[in-house]
Length: 94
Figure 1 (cartoon, helix red, strand yellow):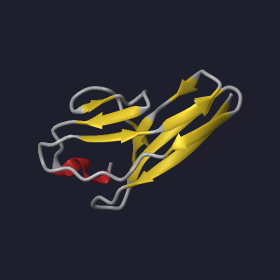
Figure 2 (cartoon, rainbow, N blue to C red; figure 1 turned 45 degrees about the vertical axis):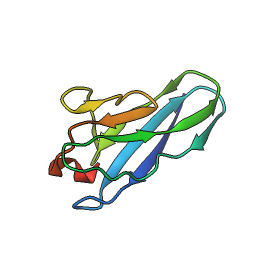
Figure 3 (tube, rainbow, N blue to C red; figure 1 turned 120 degrees about the vertical axis):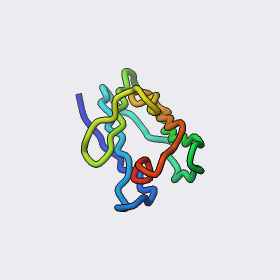
Figure 4 (cartoon, rainbow, N blue to C red; figure 1 turned 90 degrees about the horizontal axis):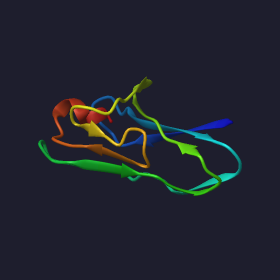
């Protein structure tokens, strides 16, 4: 299995970003990169990556080198769409 990583730069307090790590078997193409997002405090931000190729594809969202777990205001951390609901100032670096 090969591992590919893509860093999402979306500003934030430290200009950090979210990282998607993809574990794949066989050829895969990333056909749509996640776009930068802006959200109001209390709003929702969605980051989606589109892929084409052999399955399985494994997704992992992370923040400053730490893997994001599902729970709290984070969902979809292991899917093609990472959802951050009820955005707070602490989420600015994602």
